[in-house]
Length: 611
Image (cartoon, rainbow, N blue to C red; front, side, top):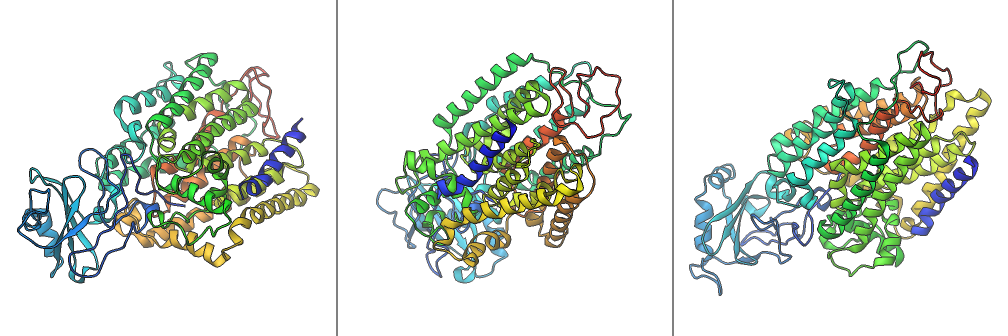
């Protein structure tokens, strides 16, 4: 039975690229999105024609109307200096320039750039945009949005918030109504409640779950455009979770005190009903309320190009110019959905992106249940599935219709393959590792860890074969996945459009980019690489709890060193954190599936697993 399941998993991994044949968020699209705009200054050289870095949420001009989060796809129209209002407008370009020039914030930034000048632009429906440029028009240094009817200043931006529209806190730009307190806070309570033990209120598990939820504080500041507060607040929870995952890697020894059964405040059948209800709620919210950011849009574009045998890299449309920054598996995964739901060729509602995001979400729930069931029985499976559907940041990713859940799905599939003792398990692990790494490149950091998993528990004569199977499957699947891209693009082009582009872009959404700490950033990156290699070779807990904790540690360490970090990356490590935290506990009703080779002595009943 296990052998047939592994064969099926391996075939799925091998067929995915052919059947379909890393940092990165951006401006969202209609409705209630940040539109891509084209701005030409009143005098001086033109700025970038379109969003300069869609995958980073960066644009050279604002596009969101104030207070509503709604936008227009119409580009601002430059207006020459005049005291006469344009047709249908109350204010003239001279008047709006005077209003903007009188603002203290604009006076301060212009004082830093001698020779700066301003230009007036018409915005749909009844707004004006005033952009201030440095000498020669090389840089947009300030931007003001003014209401035409009242002359009221609606928005004013300087610094990185001129270029980075996603740093402006536009309502609903990411995740739509999931950001509302009446949705977010109940989800936080639902996430915490089943695992709360009133008899032990100071349980370490409670602190672990609170650390996961505490990332909400950073998001709240981000949603209110307080970037200098939101960015630093990300790091304490990530560092705590990294420390906890590393602590869980210690081998279980004879005589160690082991956690008891996983005790839930809610009966398991009720929790299963909660999974069904919350999953339905998530899907319904996606269909009725969510928006598709450029990440999902890029997936549909790439899928369409693969189907029509067109170049995958270097030729994306202008309104998603750098949507080709991902690995080919990302676009191949969208092919079935593009074929079923089609694509109009514009940034519309993109039903294919919605369908893909929902499918990835459901697949993550199913894989977590299967992994939990194999580790500790159905109780853990249901608990892990419930954790995913109740955790607000996984819904945040679903409501943005991003591709980040795909990363979690492929790595979870590799872990599921690792749960089998079959000789084909290393090949399945290698196949899914290759797919994950060629979807978004961060999972490549897991390759050494997944390649060496379980080797110490094998007889010495079998270790080379297991390692070779992983490598061969990894290379074979990677080669198949690259075929659609290599039909038109060279490896150099793919490398330049993906890894080089991601490595060279600046971002204010990490402490490295926000404060210009590029030297320390490189140190943290090197430490992340060292950790990934060390966990692959050093002795550690050999079971699935240890593997999940190691995967979570590597993914968190990788994120700590990136210059562009965003909340959509949390699902990359969240399921592995939960696997490690909840997998430590035993299920009295389930036989051991992945216990260490040397069973620990315990006074508990034999049916209780040691972990």
